[in-house]
Amino acid sequence: MAPSTTWPSRLTWTNFKFSSERQLPPHVVARSPLMQAVFHEASLIAPSESRVLITGESGVGKEVVADVVHAWSARAGGPLVKVNCAAIPETLLESELLGHEKGAFTGAVAQRIGRFEQANGGTIFLDEIADMSAPLQAKLLRVTQEGRFNRVGSNTELQTNARILAATNRHLEEEVKAGRFREDLFYRLNVVELNIPPLRERPEDILALAGAFIAEFTQGKARFSASVQECLARYGWPGNVRELRNAMERAALVSLGELILPEHLPARVRSAAAATQMANIAETAEAQRLGEIERQAIFQALRKHDFNRTETAKALGISRRALLYKLQRFRELGFEVDPAK
Image 1 (cartoon, rainbow, N blue to C red):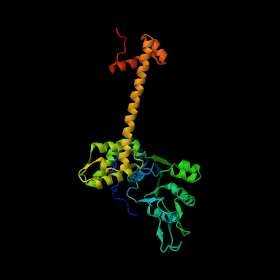
Image 2: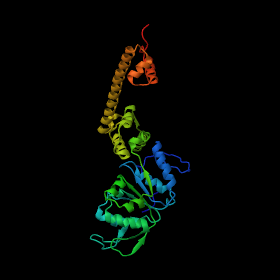
Image 3: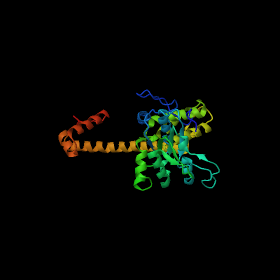
Image 4: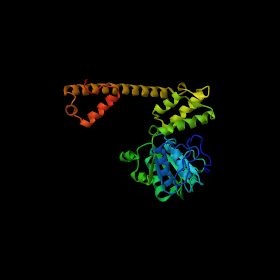
């Protein structure tokens, strides 16, 4: 595979300059402090040869982080080979990674060079590593330990010096405890872990990403209404950046003008945002009701104790200072807190 010379259009980001003078590719969004911290850490580990385990929910951008780590490494001029372990049938994954000889199995009509050979001198990105079978985990362990492997159907030992970046949306430590993932391989891959937070935890990135996506799909012609911005901010985005991108693609397709309106968003985004708004209204109403109950209880205690602050505070089980603070708040709201003269 030839070295990557362009950034895929789906990598939607924005520039962020680090103290190390490294700069993110022009399409990368890292407005939130959480993502800025991720890329700062990436800038520290990229120059090394260490293996990196990239973790996070599905759709958060693990592949993007792998792209950046490779771009900032000394191997940037070499190939970046990507393999999605979950997308390839288990019976074919070994051949995909290690290659095979002609006649090694039914359908092997020619020799095939595996991904580890293709990645020699560069980086290999193994996505969804937890989906790898136990026998193949054992062979990958040998690659991480010795840099050696055999093509399927061959006794000839080959070598690779590819740097391994692995990713998963599962908790690998739990997979190890359950016996589904080798503990020794886990520690070989997890030299450094980069955890990518879900989109709901980095709200600063939501509108920035959405704006970049909609600009891509409309050639920069469309903009969001205020209602759409509120919907995007209120929705939880369980599918993370991938779901946001899909929603923006839909909005671009169904909108007729240059203004993106709430009806152009998927129904789940509109309904969830509306439900959140109603819940907030209900919470506000409940808080107001409880506040009124508290105010009535305090005034009842004040009258009972002839407006003596110390005795009232003791009766309510709060400090005198807390009572005085509450009375000041009532006074600011226009309530009479002193006995009529």
